[in-house]
Length: 118
Image (tube, rainbow, N blue to C red; front, side, top):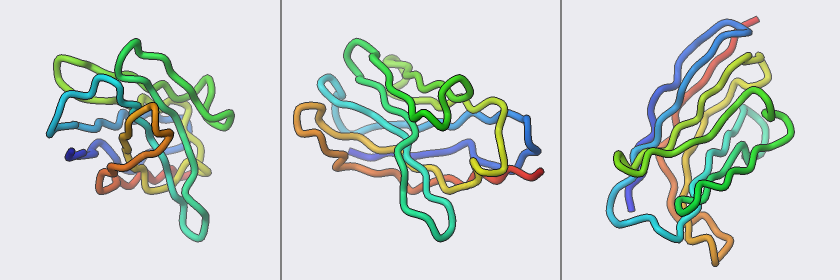
């Protein structure tokens, strides 16, 4: 499984970005895909997840109402639409994947930097 994240950049507070995670290497039925982030000096934290089959989503409280995870099965791509960005959203964002039944994320992308200035 390979995950390629893209779409990061620098924006001002209140702006928007859309991250993409292109997945390849297998079919993803039964997988759960997610976005995590890690800010400097902080631990990695969960942002959002989506079940590949059925599309059920989950978002961290800190991003609910601002971020939306989605997937395009035809393109094998997972997105993270980020609106109303805040400086505290600044971090390296990683996409991850794993079999839903294991509860683990065994595959990780390389990360993409998001910087939000006030």
